[in-house]
Length: 261
Image (cartoon, rainbow, N blue to C red; front, side, top):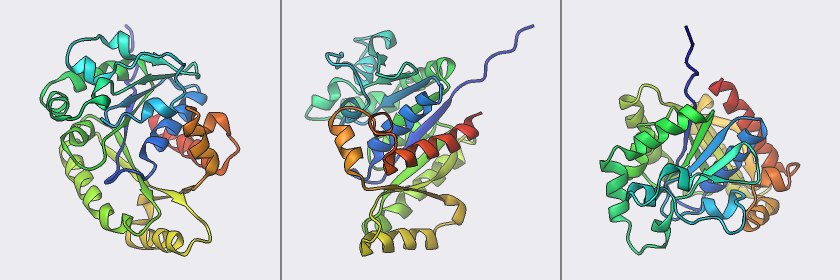
């Protein structure tokens, strides 16, 4: 009698708006998991396609990805790409990132079973699947949340975050009601600037108005090294692991890995 291996865990990274460090968080958590020896796949379903710029892909990699798989023009084997880390693979969003409109992509992603099939196969082969989602609470995000076991919310330390956070948390609450496997791991404060009154007030307000167990005590500071690493196409946890932003992501990955065990 044989015992089946447990399935891997899907971690959705979601945010109400762009520019808050969502993709940077997804990329660096995926790399940090891989550095811990976990077989990791990062899947980009955001039509903006920013994962390809920062995940550490080798030069000359294919540009096809998830959108092309949805159209049936490529197989999964064609779009799972190696990175600079032995335990990290990446699936880009593909040609939709160059398209003027994304309606057909969104329809295929939400109205077919291909996303569910893809994540099921990924869970069978990986310990962790990190999904970088589009900003907001559109159909693709709702579909990903319906198939995930964990979700985190990067939140930039700026006043606008105070307006967008409640809507995102309400959307996650709806997903929790329909997916009993899903757990909201927490809100991650990003781009924090110590000594900046606006940044400090925002962080304080968030901590005062959300449940204590909902906001991570880990904070990702605004970091030139992180921005420089992304521009170089490498996760900061790999390029500059002693940078404060890198240390924050490494520590958070360690905590999350404990939940995945």
